[in-house]
Amino acid sequence: MTAVAAQRRHTPLTALRRYTPFASASLQSLLQYRSTFLINAVTATTAVGLQVFLWRAVYAGRSGGLPGGYDLPGLTTYVLLAQMLALLQASRVDEEVAGEVQRGDIAVSLLRPVNYPLSRFAAGLPVSLANAGMVAVPVVLLYALLLPLTAPTWAGAALFVLSAGFSLVIGFGVNLLVGLAGFLTTNIWGIRIVKDSVVAFFAGQVVPLALMPGPLAAVAHALPFQGLVDGPLRLLLGHYRGPAEAVGILAGQAAWAVILIALAAVAWRGAVRRVEVLGG
Image 1 (cartoon, helix red, strand yellow):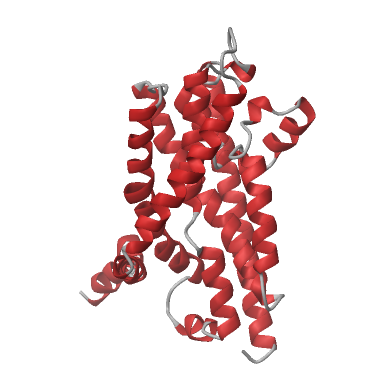
Image 2 (spheres, rainbow, N blue to C red; image 1 turned 180 degrees about the vertical axis):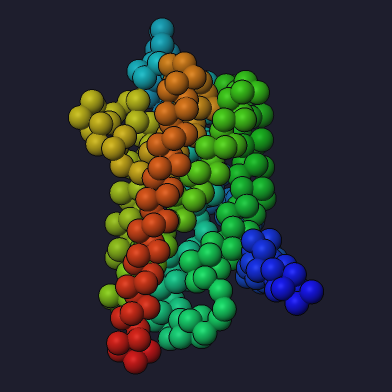
């Protein structure tokens, strides 16, 4: 009986329940500052408006198809959703990890019987989902009333949901690695600024990868960042050649998700050893 009870205590579901309080605490913190969602919505609406109307002005009145195989509604949809996917990545993981290191709170985290990277993912997940549900969806609906957009197929929507899940993990891995840089430097503000700029550009958030010059697009496709924005939107809008390419996009995202999580795990072990050596 004791062996059975011990086995139940160590089931994967029981282990995952350890991280529920982190998600719950993060959600409660969000709900205490509901005005933040309004500010984010206004900011996102303005930023999206600038991007969308700029691209529409560039290609206004152009006859025939646009570069990259897009038409104007398709390009508008891409630019709009690219900004919304960026909200999905804004989980503040890098900022909070570096903040814990700087304040010394990381010592308390090391004493908890949980995996620290998983606890940060659990805490960041409600932020991402709240940004998607309470900011991104209303903004998309607003622009759908104002501008002609491309409606996805059911298959495209299903592929997009799966791909967006991979993009969430990729974004977490990138942000966690940046946050762990706080063990090496007292302030990661500059690193975060560089990261945000590089990721936004090579993810396709600023310029769709299909519109980039060939060599630059090749570099972008070789990096993990294209799995954050360009990959999911290509699947949503049907910009791929057959099922094999669609599977290739998803497989590439899955591979980068595994690689980044593995790198984050190695970086975390190195950070822990550094804390122990320094007497943290």
